Length: 141
Ligand code: HEM
Image (cartoon, rainbow, N blue to C red; front, side, top):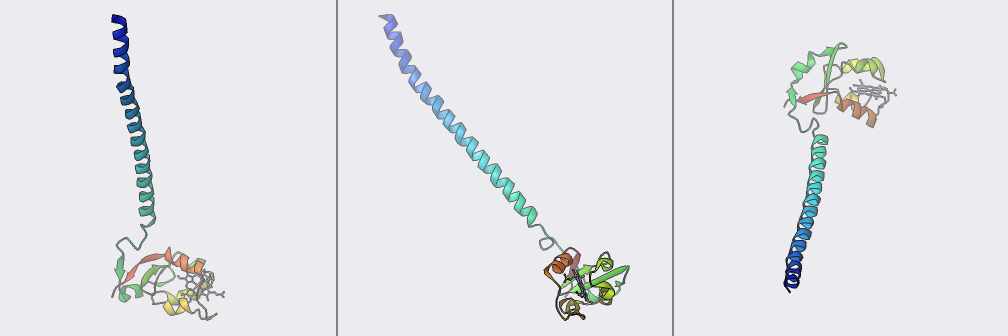
């Protein structure tokens, strides 16, 4: 008789304990799921800020025409194209168009870049890309 009572109480105690265990497991799975999503969002956000961290988002130095004009030789060649200043010293000897580029050192070369004296055409997209890698800063107002 006593045994029977014990058995029946055992069953009653075990049921809610099992349910509790299942619930904890479910909570754990949800927590892990949320953590994975959180890590994923964090990593992708970090990547996008690193990608967007180009010169345009950094504080750029500005230079005036007077200063740019002093960098007017092969060994020290700066120029302006549109509103940006470029140090093309290391590039002049590699210029596919040859030494004509030296005529632009220390000047605003926008017109020459956009309308090459020999061809009367602008530079290619590749040249524009090369140019961006040589950017030093902006032209002051
Ligand atoms: C720093 C800025 C410059 C860069 C990055 C650059 C880049 C290039 C590149 C990559 C080419 C090969 C053709 C093309 O992709 O368009 C080229 C050709 C040429 N560039 Fe430049 N260039 C620059 C400035 C200048 C300037 C200021 C002049 C003029 C004074 C000039 C005159 C020429 C000429 C005449 C050619 C040859 C066109 C031909 O005969 O096919 N470039 N340049």
